[in-house]
Every structure is written in C-alpha cells, then in structure tokens.
Image (cartoon, rainbow, N blue to C red; front, side, top):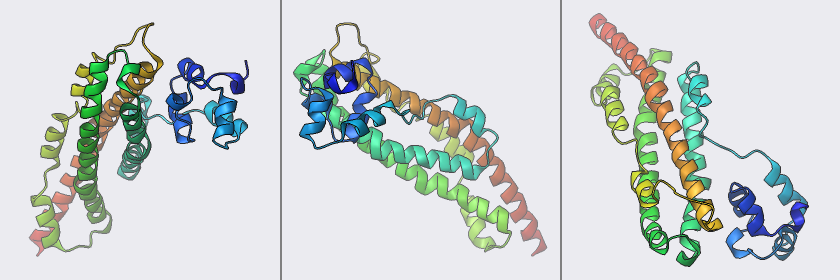
Length: 252
C-alpha cells in the first residue's frame, strides 16, 4: 500500500523513527491517528511527496559505536566538533521532541497511566539538568581544551595567564568527575522498567520508550567518546603545555 494511503498511526507503528521525522515536518502522529498521511498533509497544507521523501531518508543518529574507533585517529578539533554537533542535535531536536511526546500525549494512551504521569513530572526536570550539564561542559571543559590548543600552536602567550589557567584546572580531576556522572538516565530507565514494551503495548508507549532508549544509547556512545578519546588526548595536550610553560619559566 502506498505511504499516502496508510493511516498515520499505522505508519508510525511500522517504524517508530517516523514519529520524529513527521513531528519535525509539523505532523504530530498522535493528533492524526485515524487519518491517512495524504489527509494529514492536505489538512496541514504539506506536500505529501516531500514528506514521504523525508521519511525515506536515513535518520541522524549518534549511537553508532563505530564513532569511537574512527575518532581515535582524529585531532582534538574534529573530536570537539563532533561532540558539539551532538550537543546541538540533542538540544534542538531530540530533547524537545521527546518532551512534546511525554507532555502532550494523555496518560490513558500509555500502557501505565501512573508511569506516564510520573514521566510528565520527571522528564522536564531531567531535560533542564541535562541542558545545564551540556552548557557547563562546553563553557568549562571544551573552552579549556581550546585554550590549551592555542598555547601549543602559537607558543606566544601571557605566561602568567596560562600558568593560572593550568593551575586552576585539572583534566584528570574533570575526567574522574565526568565518569562518575555518566548515568544521567538511570532514574528514567528505572521508572520505565528498562523501557519495557511488549506486543500489547500501545503505539504511544512504543514510540516514547523507543525514543528514550535510543537517546540513552546515544548518551553512552557520547560519554565513551569523551572518556576514552577526548580526555586522554586532552590530558596529553595539557602535559605538553605544562612542560612548555615550565621550560619558558626557567628561561625567564
């Protein structure tokens, strides 16, 4: 059956990733459960062929373990760029979409109304804390690494300022602290019984739990990139900069 003639709810039930694509295009699947894709597009003044083309494109994902092996051989610039791109994707697309799902869909459409009500309360708090964590990471860790890169590449700097920079930061300490905070979604995972679904689960539950599970998978890969690649490379850079500063101080 052509995509146009399939009910929106059935389309999403066949592939849960369609929910986020449709949402980005303005079609919230839970608002058009009994309409075909063509009818929903007509109602929203969208081109059905363009929507179908978007559904058939590969979706953006940040949970591929291969990223770790590839990034091991990349420069710190590339690694930081990859991590920032993931941050932007999480903040601009993934988190807002999941929040809309959690907050818009009524509890009675879930497998468990109590879990749905609890998610409506806890997810916005998780989202706020997570975004704060990302902002703090970029403003402290990432900027510190970029400053170290600048010192290493230019060898022309205010020695007192850089000594103060290195003295007041410790990547080893940051790395240890970061590893202890990696399991951000523990509470949500426990609340949803490890995102448990079965053949009788509603489409709404399947979509939301699948999105949450995929997001946690992305976060695990993201954390591994930081812990296994970013920090070791940055610590090595920090040590080289410190050696350079020590040699310069002896000359003075």
